[in-house]
Length: 335
Image 1 (cartoon, rainbow, N blue to C red):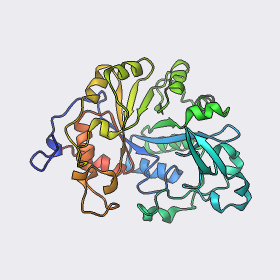
Image 2: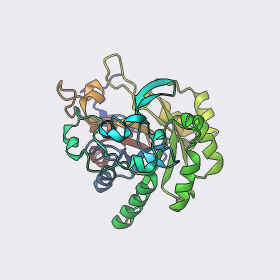
Image 3: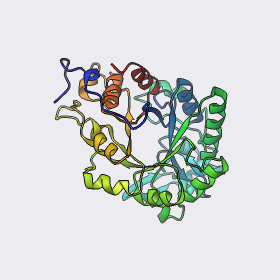
Image 4: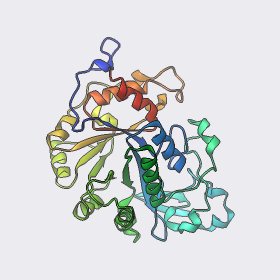
């Protein structure tokens, strides 16, 4: 049933989460307000009061993990303007898709550190471009140090969700992600089951390896068009502690793009003891269900809080979002 004005989202029957208070997780930092994967984006999210920050990890040529969503750098840095790196532009096939540009795997950390970060979606988030060039690309160890310092300063622990990107590709080029990951976590004393660290990937091979090498929780991410049958959940339960599905797998959309009643996914996952962290809730109309948009402008802000409330009512254990301040407000006022 599509949710209408006669059946407001906040009045859906509420399912139970596996955790006392579902987490609000800042997706690549407060990326609705700052260029993603910058220390400023993470600090902004922590100031807002998030429970956790989420970051994506890829590997440099010399084996250092850095926070980038993409291996290709031209969308989120000024690499295309750097004449001294022009010779590194090439075509690389990543997960079966040919891309042309400059790739993290081809740069050493000193080379990567010469780049300046910039906003990924300048047309959608023009205000964020005011921060273009203010920071570079942070390493995992720099982010962990910052989170530790901010946690101590604010008197509350801030968790970290680490997504390992293109893990199979990294294996193929001789830069496996798990070795530097576990090394960096150990360096910061975060390699024990009480650490506020969760390991995530869309690729099960690296998650299975990590499940054998660490007691940190492991989360299998799930694409929006991936069928999640009971058999699939049973297989995930063999090695993982949770799942990270696209929001539409929990709140299916009808043929008009409006959200409907929740699916059974959260209930089925919880039956197996698997937590559920959904991705990615964004505030702009273009990303929202059609019945939660305000006006026709695709980049105007819609009713993201209603989507968060519906996800919480469905019983999810965490909401990963670009606009954590709105998600936190919705969690405080669930009705």
